Length: 169
Figure (cartoon, rainbow, N blue to C red):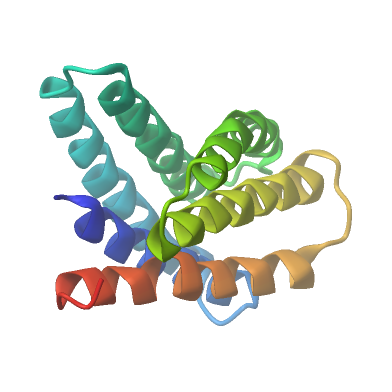
């Protein structure tokens, strides 16, 4: 029920972070959407955990918190001037942690929406892996990571959120 809310703000933060990485938004400005999205998705996760009565419900909240912490960390790095290496290593942890969700979702996909969701998990795992390579390993992937972030924001979150909010999905 709260998925479209979370996806809308994940779409906003990924799209804007992609633009920020392309130097279209200043460091100080990008803090707002990252912290707001961390708070919104974190609240959704906590509400979901409060009503969780199955392992699947707990898993959904846990996966949402991986997103929330990522955005909190980006925002805090911009506020503190940190170099992002810690976020890079966390991104590797997240990338590895969400691969099983991608595999399970695709393996059990019964319709187009489930296939789309499984492919989103593949894309998000790849995106977090790019952040690991960029921030922790220091590979010069700024342009590739920025473009992947922007495209991911639009295709895996913003457009699907709008479809859900307006009853098209």
